[in-house]
Image: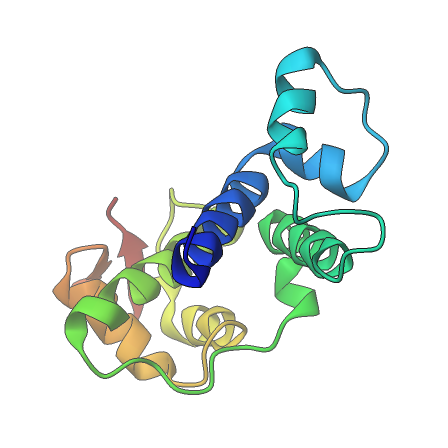
Length: 152
């Protein structure tokens, strides 16, 4: 087996661990393993108690869990610079607005200063996030222009 295919195989295994809560728990902690999970973990021949990859994979899995939690906003820095290409920036802008309205509620218009402050918790460039969301139909400005409604 070539070095490249070995590296690709390890990367696939790492993705499988990070994507599977059962495998993450098995690698990160002392979870009770069923036969199927034990066999999957057994295929990680490059992960051992003395292997350098085990601690790194465990820390990565823990960070992934932290990112998925509601307190992730408090643990990681906000986005300093949004991607320039629309196809990279638009999904991020939409996700930021979704997170904002998950917390603020989707049933009422939100005044622009409140929306700006909420977006600023995630990204420095508030105007581009708000503009992207309006252009993509995720946000709608009220007739007087003073507030925004979540559309999706």
